[in-house]
Length: 142
Image (cartoon, rainbow, N blue to C red; front, side, top):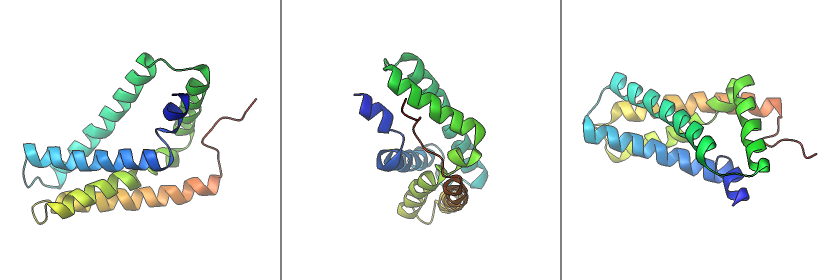
């Protein structure tokens, strides 16, 4: 179980979770506000990003995890505190999910597709900056 908790947020599983979040964000927005404009879509995106932070904080508090898992989580929280590119690069996959959802519902979801493209571009720039730092996603073994 420790390996699952450690790997859940990185690599392919992390990318798939973020794509799913982008798809769910677009689908929920279309269900509540069909044909939403850019401002509404942006507000939903910001609300979803805030909800992810709140859910992650609650999970850290209530999910029983070993000291190794908690050290990985703490390492990544510190990376996010000190390196904006660590968090911003996650927008690539969220943008992919939004663009997929925007493509499926075209043309009513042009704002969703456009915001997905902006997220993808911002995340791609952050990914390049992150890779230039060459930092590890895991704490050093002691």
